[in-house]
Image 1 (cartoon, helix red, strand yellow):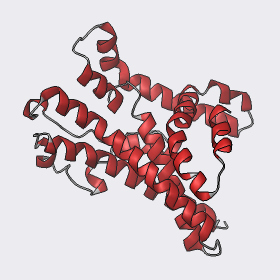
Image 2 (image 1 turned 90 degrees about the vertical axis):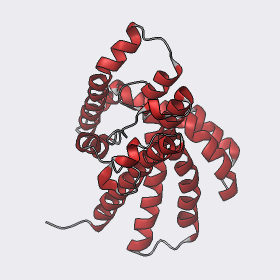
Image 3 (image 1 turned 180 degrees about the vertical axis):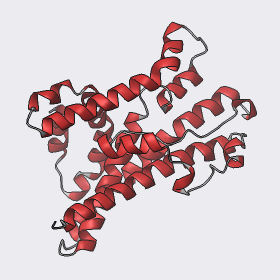
Length: 243
């Protein structure tokens, strides 16, 4: 069996990108919680950039298979926050903000390597793909975590802002995990069927549609800032948002 070096490079770069994105996301939660007065994450060893401290097996498998997933939630005790709701909201949104900042910074680095480094070695190929996947996964993870489904950050932000605990809240709290797994499995099956020639199944990829729309919206400011710097006309960036 012949080994395709480019595929190995892409797989390795993709895995490293997932490791970096997930680790920084969870570290941000732990760091902000600690700064807001809650030492719980630090006591559990989660105030760390060690990836092994943060991985959730099912979430990592989902991320590897379909590009959507999660890490092990950072433990917090909101009663320790100096200001309860502010601390809860800042901690819940910390990972999302971290990933968006990462996407904003990795995109120009990717363009620098792509445009100015000679594409003649495996090292350059690896670096190009790694920086691209760091941008894509950072933006994807940021958007994915905005979904208001437990245990994602979007639900925790809603929890911090919402004082009421009505039927919708209780339903999402009790069933959010299962809804999330359904959407991920459904997205994976649709993609697999598309690869087998059933192109029509792409229209039934619910999570895929949500992510494509949201990534265009959230990715537009990044492209609008850095694109013209590297010679991409703003009109072309605007058309990519509309289409």
